[in-house]
Length: 230
Length: 404
Image (tube, rainbow over all chains, first blue to last red; front, side, top):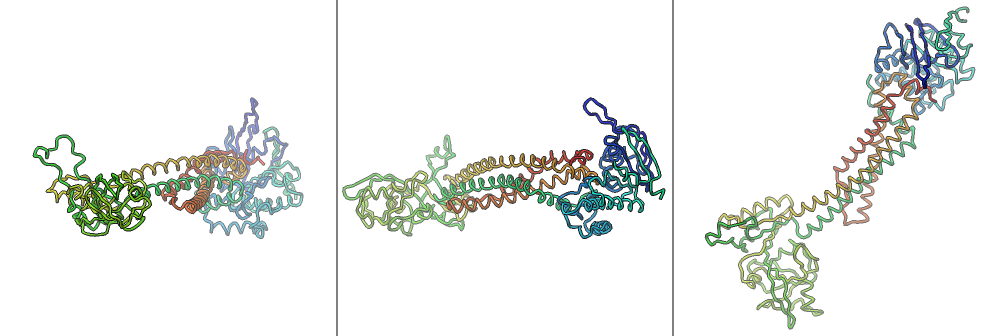
């Protein structure tokens, strides 16, 4: 479903050319659980942003569900992000002045869905994540784990095929981090494709497929996590 | 993907109340701009109302009839046959009362005469008129009464004096009821005019007023100097003018041998000048709106850079550049609208205060100014937010999200 072929992503920093991604070829099938690991600067976040259509490759081709998305316009890419891709960030990125429910509602609002149609879906999403009683709280009134659950509800409200998580537990304590991982893995069991960037080997090791990045290249691609052996 | 306008409005509203200090700052800037335009135009309008009101007190809705045709230049064909323009007569004046649109008609004769009382004598301007003259010119009496209503051609031997004439002839003595001499006739003083100040050409303090028929006898003429016609309303001025021209022409065997001047023409010139002044003052005040616009731009630029992460997030969850632009502009418009409404309230309150402090000044801002100033405020707010909004729409989501 995700096909990257010979992807380059180069940045010009001063008079130096930085190869954030260098000839990356990668296929990820529907429903896969993939972790991307590697030291900082290895290009793992760049790869995730590129898959999420937040960034465009310098060279190469990216096909998402058979469509060449590198050729799409900004508006078309925005539409794909809205309907087919969900993002979960380390910093949560909730809009601070909006309530949990309003944050979750945002993708549907941007898609132009009517308010009365949005409400039951938002309620259901918050309910599913055990956040129904926090629906009208502002982010500042929520704990880190709760905020990330709201962010996950927002990422999945449009029922995307792909969920991209960038260090989703990076700002959480061990317990709530574990809760969030459990939620994400539950989504994988429900059929979503999860791609997670992390520098925590314990976290990355849980994925069935583990990619390791080094200097903009795929250093290793191993299938068979603990789930498989279990 | 089209946003619902209710969602846009709600989102903008949440953004405004989410940053109260910033919102308040911009509201105040906008309100000062709008408020000062409202107050200053109210002041200008007040001045205009005051001046035209004063001017109108010389007589309201006046149409003045003069004998002779002022446009006639060069060789008058009438002169070939030894004809001169016909005189304006008392009968002409009477004829002019026969229209529903005419409220009052006051004939006027003017002459310089020698007035004496006892040993004292003085040359003064004598006005011959009727009882109608008092209300037509909005004069007021200091003592006694004005000429009484009587037949227009009755030469009653009564006189009304101006203040100066009274002082010079009678000094500290009582003037009312005394007999004085004008030329070779005796007149009884029945009233003293209050000092009116100088009003276009005639200083009433220096005049003596007697019935028009008596004046004609003294001056030995049948002709009138002027006929003052007061129309019922401002709208009636033009019809009355036409009526006067037609009536006089009919009475003068079809000759248009009078000149008809409307006070309206003079008044409208004053109106124009003071209107232009109001506009100029309002325009100067509008500069403060432009300053408010610059402030809006600055604050919106800061708002966009403060909310970089939020904008990055909106892009990540599928907002198109157009939607971002729309949201920022909607926020600016809402802010401008609220600022303009606040400014209107402040301006109207100040104008009200002005009217309380200076009751003679009818300081009401014109309605069109209110409409225009709100429109300018909105346009300013949106135009000056275009740059920040465009910056927001162009933000690179990856960079925007990595900021913390």
